[in-house]
Length: 240
Image (cartoon, rainbow, N blue to C red; front, side):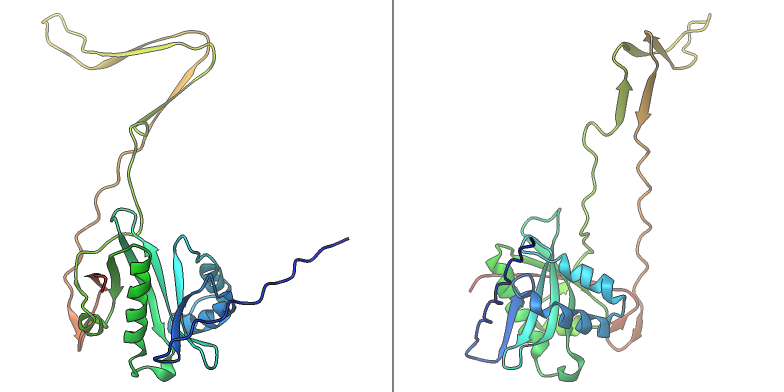
């Protein structure tokens, strides 16, 4: 016999007495997932399934998807995503900021960012990073300023990563470095002396680190307030 767990009703949307728009976490209101997928694909087209998979990965432990909802019609009209920056304490990265095209120019983008910053502070984060292509003036008005690029990925090797030694049960290995001398007493070359018993051994050395990336090309304007490369910006938040 199959047992089906009854689905809990969605949480009621919080009401804002000042306006009908509220910003809520997507993981708490998953009923807006499909609307967000449609909204994002209008701005950045991709496979609908890939978009849904990305949205379903949002959770309370980051990345967090935030939905701007018009409460009177229960419609998602804005979205953005927050991710932690591993190597910067107390910082996050905001991306995929979008407002429904038909209602742009009414201050809803600024409203989304204002509400978003309040949520970020509630999560004990105080520095916001983002990247933009052509919206630098918009973010400058909100207090953001240009900064160096940041990475959402952490790299590094621990002390055990430089060499890995695999030996079988009955193997003993002794390795040393020596500089043999020629008849004239000068060092000739470096050799490794290895003593082993019974079974063979394998020594795996970590591959060398890749070369550093080339420096970024200088940005050149291709139109009014539009650059040919993304601009990274940041803002330090302060609690009121």
